[in-house]
Image (cartoon, rainbow, N blue to C red):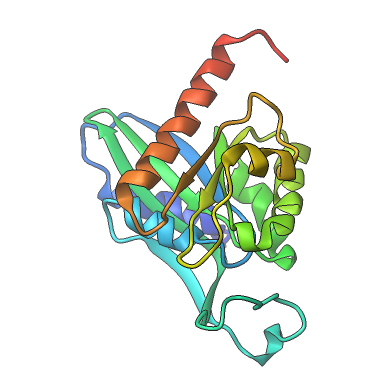
Length: 206
């Protein structure tokens, strides 16, 4: 009896069905962040295929476990991953894997991070302290990342240098802002991440 495919393996298999025949290489990136920060929205905004999502309705079981403060309209949450694809050129495809944000799903991160070049971490300034755990998880796993502030409607805006200080980011860590509903700003944040990863490969080992 064959073993069941893991979530990321199922997404990879499904992706094969959509990839143009000319594509011979692929790049895998994570879209990470804490609960309710906009990861699913971002993947949906940029993916050229219908995203694969694993959203479930939030139930009373989440009471006291998931922090719903400031998210009165949120009724679903990702329980495994989001998956999307962008064809960069006829030979190269970019696969995006959105991670679940709750701590109880952290065991999935190791699997989703396997083979990923880096991560784009979304931050909500209304709950900026929650980003520390996500950044720590990536650092523990040696996954390089860039940070993007998702500018929610009604949220107070802060200069990026103040956000950098609040997150205690290294000077070389890219920090930008976006609207997860806006494809152009999301693509620019992904470009910033990819450029950062490219330059890291050219630099001597840190």
